[in-house]
Image (tube, rainbow, N blue to C red; front, side, top):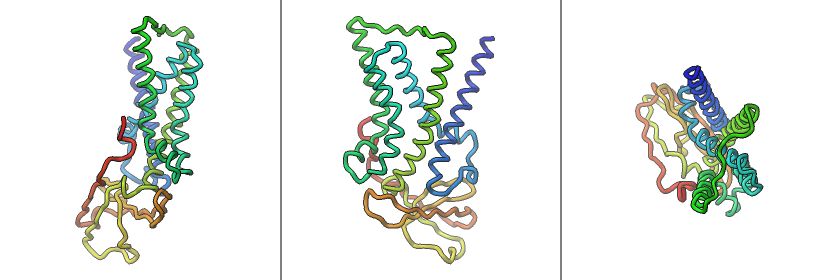
Length: 252
């Protein structure tokens, strides 16, 4: 019976990872007018794309568990702020030209990691001072089911916002976040082919998906033009990765 429970839990985890990975990918490609179904994107790729969502879902679960066990109002406010970070940073792009909003949005990864680290540090200091929280679950099976529903629902919502967030960052700062690409054709390029700078959005064994952006003011959202080119039509694809440190990786 125990083996069956472990197998069910593992299967549920894989299914959840594949689902949130697929949602994150769908919402990433949606602003570019690209469907993951048209790409080589199966459940394995979806599961691999889910690691960031799963990681933060686990963090959120730990924060909520701590709130339930301690029943402290201050920790409940921390959990509420943490729950709203994906939503706030996504819609923060509406005001991305403001320096303060831009600092908040660009360092979303830092805030999502910083909150659990601060709470963990508080627990360690509490143990050093002799205050130990009771980690035993005291709310029965129904409480566990409700806890799982809340955490899982947040993970599904966060997956959509994380995908849209990644897309919006690219639409605002493509030259800093996407690699430049140069294509060499086996034959003449299409008649409407543009010589504008191209950026690599996706590549698999069958196609290269490139995007060009209409020139715009810095911090403003660019308008993308996406092209999917079959590999047999190309002689060579030269990729130049962007340089520098990306915002969000400067602290944690």
